[in-house]
Length: 172
Image (cartoon, rainbow, N blue to C red; front, side, top):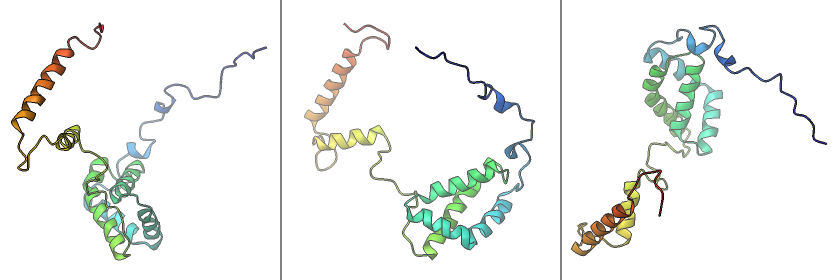
């Protein structure tokens, strides 16, 4: 025989996370560092300490991009109430450079996260260009052959005629 489902009475109440007093969370109170210079005075000694630099080098050797590390550091500082998110965004490029300096001084290879990854396409337009080049639609100078351009225009017209109707229209 099936057991009757008993309600979970120890689960959080909906909206419970919004019932704390205003200012009870670190990010709801005034930040500890108000300017970019003050925030850098917080980050630079931390990055120069042996403990943090060793952990930083370990993470960099794992292949984590420097930009991700810097963004994580500044986001954690925002959540701790060290500085505001806008100061964090202004500090971010300096943090990336400082972390790269730590990696360069230790002579390790790291992924900066600033170079474009060849595996990831930036847009569908790049993908379409590559596919078009594969079908040899361009000549050596990079211009379209007249026959190929007419074929592409005709294919686009046919595709537009086939898509008559809206999203909810019935297909016949």
